[in-house]
Amino acid sequence: MKSILCALTLSGALLGAATLPATQTDPVAPAAKTIPATPLVPAQSVVPAATAASAAKTIPSATAGPDQVMPPEPVIIDEEIAKIIYEFPDYVPVPAWKGAIAIQGSDTMAPTLMALADAFNRLYPDVKFNIRGGGSGQALQDLVAGACDFASVSHDLTDAEIAQVKKDTGADVVVIQIAAGAACVIVNADNPITQITREQLNGVFAITHSMNKDPIFAWKELDPTSPIGEEWIALYVTDENSSTMKTFTDFAMPNERFTTSYFYREPAPSSVVNACCAYKTAMGIGSFKHMQPRAKTLSVSADKGKTFVAPTVMNIYTGKYPMSRPLQLVAVLDKQGNLPPLLVDFARFALSETGQDEIHDEGYSPANPTKLPEFIVRANAAAASAAAHALSTRSPNAAPSAVPNATPGAAP
Image (cartoon, rainbow, N blue to C red; front, side):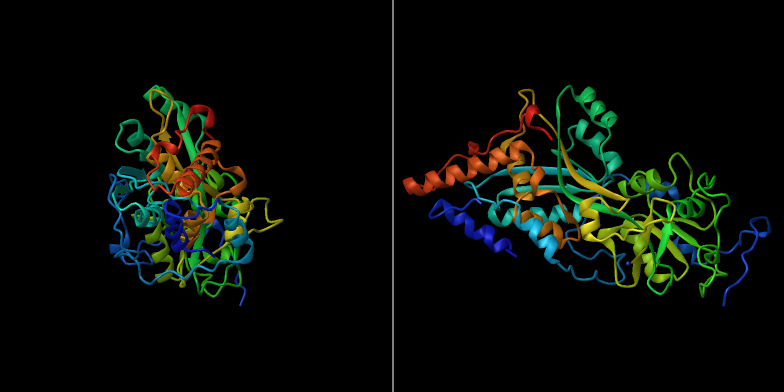
């Protein structure tokens, strides 16, 4: 697969050629259960809910945060995914950009956006990036307030959300999907359980357990043969404003509150995975991207146990995995109905083969190369035309405005 060096080589188009580019025990009756007073994990691991809903914060550029207990597994690119990434257009550079791009929102997306920004900066070192987390729930508010150029949102935007942004800003909105991710049910790698149904998840996590007759407290209620069957399930989640939790709650417990039994709120999805790595009785809701060797994901059934689907890169790409979700950049168009050319070009880079390589290296599934926004298609054509013109005239100085603006009619 082509690397970022391919994109750097393409910058020579301004001087040369350009190309377009997964012993049985009797269950205890629910009425007989009492909730233990002492949790299974150290008290210091509990994060009060009030501290979880923190304000937007800058995500460190380092690949390993202080809460990580081990590095993630290396990304393996299979043949199917490689073919999909190859279908994205090559990124043809334009003359050197100068300016700034501010992106705020999804904590899950922030490291990937930083990787994209670093790759973009290898071509255009004079572009300054300010990429901050804070959660997808806060992202649209920041966009409306003018605090960022792009809101990064890792859930399906509803019509009501888009309409509210339009109402608050008086302008049209463009939504650009750059990748696909997933919310996952995560357990310790030594836990023998491999699958779970939507109804079981509802019984485990929801205090009212509307989809399940009884609440589920102990591991033997999910697997009677489990060696940890007598142990209670310790639950780990993150801020309910995060898209990871929204995707899970919409699937398994819509309009229900979390149980109060063994319920720990972690500061970020990666912390949930860390807890599952450390504690054999843990079950958490985290992001596919943050998986580590000492944790594993469960296959999930959305049809009452008829079929179970694992959260693989391909199943997430196709949407077959029931908690798949899009990763999106959202922007407000100006009064003329345009998106500034620099923002268009960064989106064009993200939706190129080079950009999708970076995104997949970060642990996400690609976007769909057959569904590129029309304004991205036009931008690619304009960049190729400008590079060809530069070749024919042997002049590297083509105007950056060769990258067209995004207009409401071109919005996805």
